[in-house]
Length: 45
Image 1: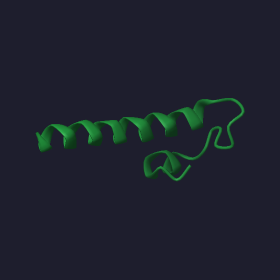
Image 2: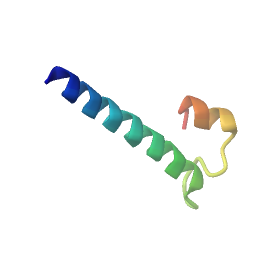
Image 3: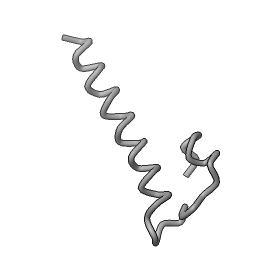
């Protein structure tokens, strides 16, 4: 049962932060609009 929770929360964590970074880069009124590619890969936004 511990593996199930680990997989669930790990996937939730990765999807949440991955989508958040991409949304930051594509939203028109975001401070990170069209940021450099290194900000996207390192999640520095």
